[in-house]
Image (cartoon, rainbow, N blue to C red; front, side, top):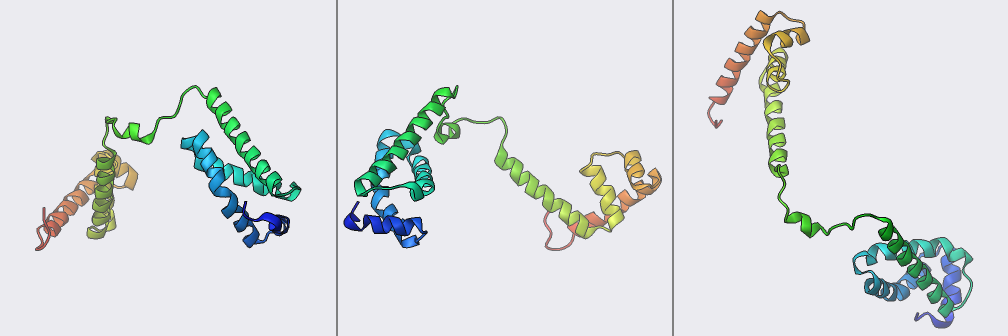
Length: 186
């Protein structure tokens, strides 16, 4: 640490919550701490460093000693986090795979197409509601989205099946006119 003789003053200020002191400690110690963690656990170094700094923050008010003692204490916390990680990993039955491995495995479904279909379907439903009166929109949505037949739609809406068929016919005529309007592509 480059703090030298000022370490006791900096540590006292950090215990009192002075941002400048915490920042000074972090700037001095973090590069060495991260280099150590990258050497012993390259894939987990950043996460481990976060855990170490949480530990330093929790124990800072109880720490007593000089600069060398502080460095030793911080690296002790780092070493313990590495040991904890390795113990957890030893208990785990499988080793997590890197994300690059999953990029090469093709799935049975196409999530991108499903998402685009969902967006397209949402747009279609929104347009139906905009173009049709509420009772006609209900009939069309219950039939198309709900997959209900005329009798079930009638039960849901509290209407007779004949009324539902008339509403459906009128809705389809209105939609045909709307899509035949200039500027609308099929």
